[in-house]
Length: 413
Ligand SMILES: Cc1ncc(COP(=O)(O)O)c(C=O)c1O
Image (cartoon, rainbow, N blue to C red):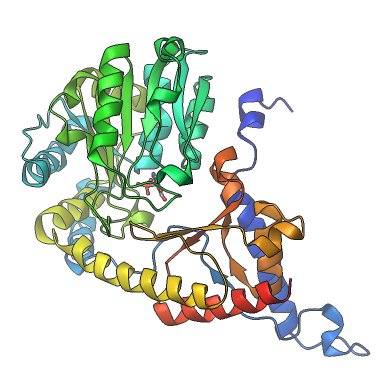
């Protein structure tokens, strides 16, 4: 059966690998819960006394979307046109409300006709963008570590990816000056994202401003993935839209998944210079139609009727972050300060390194022994090796119970 080299290059992906491990663990749990066959002792399956799965591996929140957004979706679902294909023109009311949000949020006038595009998630948008702006073999700059689909999108477009290593000693600040001018001249696209997943770093506007200056100098596209814009816990989240020249070469991706907890509904948007929006729209037209008008109604309600929802989430995540960081530190883990919501980014404990565990082996061993599932840092690029990402997607009490299990495991190494 012919399968493309492109797909082979993508590999299985860290979330898929974790998914298989979680499935194996839940099968062991199920086996432990069922009565043993005659003649076997209950401990024969090695699963007796297993703790339940505590999945801290995905940035998929347990928190709920605004009821007004859900009500708007429910109402709009009853309208026959919600079941129809939705072509670009019909997304105008959504794009207009996005433009109004940008005006309120950044004081920026955005043209909803030419500078806004509806997306099926910022993952979809950032993954498709390279196909819209790059030719095979074109150079693209990616932070390392990075969100996995950023790398995947560049692979799909057969880009030559240049990794810019982020250094924890520098607070994960991208050192753009580390790249020679010659490399900059070969680049056509730069993909950034602050607040930054997985390092849990808010970042600074000055970093984006520097990126923008270089993008203009070297005539390349600057894509900024910003689904966490409203989830900075320390400092102010940077945004491309705050730069006066964003139209010249910039495109920024926003999402309803994080600030409004609508991740499963898959709706997001891009704001950018007209040629970029047009190119991405043309590309996407081959792949899909737009999300249903019912989902657009929910997103509009989120922006217009629940603008303060992210603020409520921040208070919850702040408490979770502080309690979990304190609990893990009490258990002997090193926990760097996280400046954005949703994640902790943990260096592998010394004891795990001494046992020869890399991030993937450690995540597998920890899950096997404790039922706590983290995401191994190697899934976020080579620069993520030596780290684990922990998502704060359960109530503080559950997180603290997880920290106790992680502490017992660490002491047993
Ligand atoms: C940096 C980044 N971009 C995109 C996404 C996916 O967002 P969406 O649900 O809008 O596709 C995530 C999800 O965790 C993310 O961390």
